[in-house]
Length: 162
Image (cartoon, rainbow, N blue to C red; front, side, top):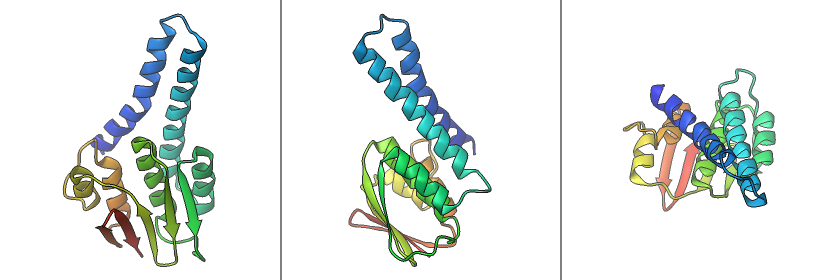
């Protein structure tokens, strides 16, 4: 839990630290844009984290958050929306894409969640609950949320099978 809190703090404090540094300088329009982007990033991370730990989180609510952030294209294919931890898994995947600053497509079927993503060794060990570091903690959280499911990673395709 301490590692997760450390990662969350890092993802919130870094953008806000950049804002603080810019506020000490003369603010031109470029600096204003960076400030807005940094604050927006921190708010997105905070909104996602708060929602992941909410007892009332639904897949529909997670989908609305993901659409606002615009890092994931969700493709629901006749999926029941009440699968265990699906909303939390989707939001944690969103955090991964946000952290990597890459956009991606997540396909959700009635039997699995699938995404095309490059995962390094540290992240992979976190996904399979072998190693927890601040760098791999979002993957570790996905692994924890998927404990009773089958998780596969082959040819840059990650699958969580229900």
